[in-house]
Image (tube, rainbow, N blue to C red; front, side, top):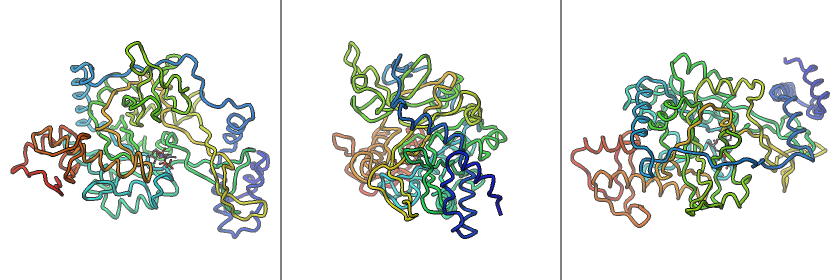
Length: 475
Ligand code: UTP
């Protein structure tokens, strides 16, 4: 039985005694659950966030003073230095052959917009075989391990909500061919939601309204879970970070890893030129000599639309949430030492809670605040950060919404276009429309080819070459 008096006292002293208002009514088991949840809460942190983010005079938004566009390495096709790109790729390949790189998926989000029942990674996305997102990543990681002769470790950050289901799904599918000992799921942290008065909200009489602490929580979670120590033991110093909702991603990209390592960067990023001025992406900028990502909601529209003398956008660099991160940088950020902690952001939300009589209520409008950290807020702390350009068609087509933009439909079409491009680049006859969408439903397994290079090699070896017809699967 957990001793509860000290915990109750600290909550009372922090003005959060109401969390235990129904404690005496709870069963012993329920009491234990509440105590365990309460022990997770950092009261000093909540107090600080209430004073800074909830105070009436809290400054909303971001200070854009001194903002400049961030420099980035253009792709060779866009005038980038061909020799430097080739060298970067060679350095990245050497790192992969030396086993220095691991894959890292953040999969702790709630996926509310998609509205799918289950961990998002279990959502089926491929055009023909309906492979789930986790399978695509697993197969890309497996194939890259084979290509470079060193099997890769895969770290997956889950949430309390989806951890068990994620582990069960991966186990049920035998880790999609990966070695079980190289797949590591760990939970991210949680933060309590608070009312606009800073009081911690209860979800029920015996549970606190807790939610994941944002993808930025991944840095703390990597340290806390022992993932960093495992990496160190295994000689891994570089993490390839990507999100769970993006099957197009080159999750193991030697050129990206190489640019990062050559520059001695602690955290590197990929950018895509914004599709149109108002596109809702974060913007890579430099402020007072540091690389920052400014969210579209924080960058004044005039700056989003600003053009240079040649009519090009002055802030073209959109963030697509792809990073290469140095292990010891994560450790430093996670240690939360003086001045290195990630900031929290406030999001006003409808939070299921209880009313004054203890009855559960689902509010009609925002009734409180969730606190989240964003991983890109680590960039200003990173030494020598590099931003490289990538082609959206090769790296980014997320499944965010059930319909419309960034939906299963747009993602399926983008996968089809990618498969068609690979085939056409290698001389196959593929009928496509003006947008590059093939007439036939085709699918390339990552085990066959997971990027242009691996596809080209596999296609060259394939005899006889199949005709591109409805239902072609290259596996
Ligand atoms: P999103 O910002 O798309 O959020 O996450 P979401 O929670 O998945 O979806 P919505 O907004 O509720 O519809 C981007 C990536 O960051 C991960 C997600 O799993 C996704 O890969 N993420 C987000 C976490 O791992 N933890 C979090 O707390 C939030």
